Length: 272
Image (tube, rainbow, N blue to C red; front, side):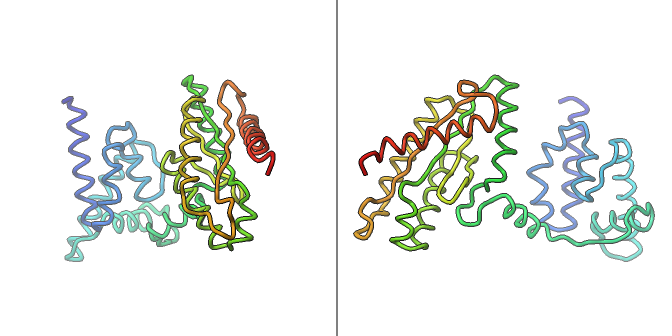
């Protein structure tokens, strides 16, 4: 092991130990990320940003880390009890460095729940439509840089409006949730595009995308959503487009997948 790796390993344990004095939750929250942070060049930059929200140059961040530690131990000695690193950092930035004028306490769990709710549809727990363009363009950039295929699969639930009107909104919600849950078994990149439309974006070629889409289609057919009041049962249709075969721009690829979806629906239900 190189000397710098040994140093980082020691710092990693030191950081976890220091933070664990604040609360077990802090230790559990940070530990999965600490190994990754420890291997990066801007170690102290990331630690202070994580703890305080402030961004400093790496050398300044390193200097601040040890100044805050010293401050923490001085306060702890004066008070006769252990003061957590965050409390010491707060006092240091407010009363010594003077870069904090006011304090806002944020519940990390509540903050994370708000963040999740902002990105995910509340019923299906897949990404909202407004997240699709950002992530789709991000994936396209990677596909272009690394020469990968990228598939867009558009799914639509057949006769969903009729099913919803016949069986009721609770039954309709159950169908939406089950379709989304099935899609999540195949990909983390699932987006609720419309009322009963979903999009999956993955680094798959056409054959893989079609294989997955057909498996999903078959699984939905097997679900026991059919009833006497709605004899058609529930099924889904899909359309696929692939970068770079079908285009190179996000909107173009999405439109192609959507067009192919509705062409498939027309063929499937031509005589219904």
